[in-house]
Image: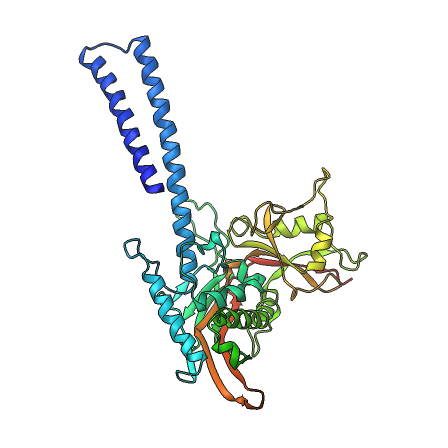
Length: 415
């Protein structure tokens, strides 16, 4: 166990330090300097202490990364992380929920089944069901699986936007930044302090309803060997993810969420002569049009269409090195100019007037999920075919809240 190994290393470190102190104390008691042999021993023990410190730090960081991954995935469902002294507690809760859901699917409960996230109202992390995201340490329930499939089909959700889980669907006001303070300067004694205040506005996040119908044969529902929960989570997550994900890219904000493209600002222009096809210089311009604090964010990503990526892969810098770098780690995104790159079919293709590349800090993009997921069952809708129909409903909204240049786009030249 890592904890036991760290404990032993600490004990070893304490023992080495005791030996070093004894050596120094002996020389001090005799009011003399360390001999050459003693100095060699002192230096050797200090080198061992440094090595032990590095090993302990490395192991503790590994444990913290594992704990952070578990906490991050747990935040996705809005539930607190299970305590180490309560093994199996989450598993028992998951089993109880699964049994209740299974009864509902069979028609042994009511016609409606709500699956609600619990815990904090606001979360910051969305993550897929991968080992790195805590799959190996956090029990997987229906809500987690559904949202994981929702993330799979949405590049925006993969960038770790800011997510607000709220119990209800009432409109909430979110402040948005439209301009930062400017005009700071040295002021002489008694001089007038200049500058401007930052400019704020407000954006309202509502709760647009996304829904679909899923039909399942009665035989499939009755078969104990079929993981019907996983099937429904996959179908609902992907379908809603496709619809919601499209709006998170290009939504107009009128009767639908506001997409990132809608509120992003221009960062670079592709040459007109090339019918909007960008060059390496254009992409570098876009990269550096986003200021350093946003570029340094863990949520700073490139997003483009698959066909656009085919163009981006061919670009080289002045030394002949490709700007695109394939990932060498399973599950990790490819890199472009040192930042992760995702593809989304909803981003426009390369062309005149088209905003074909997004780049920036997507933590400034807020996603609001209202309540949980509602399933409703009907045995009558497809009575003639003996199919059971489930209606899945999820409510959400989204918008970019920093309009000062957190997210920028490349557009094909209009001239």
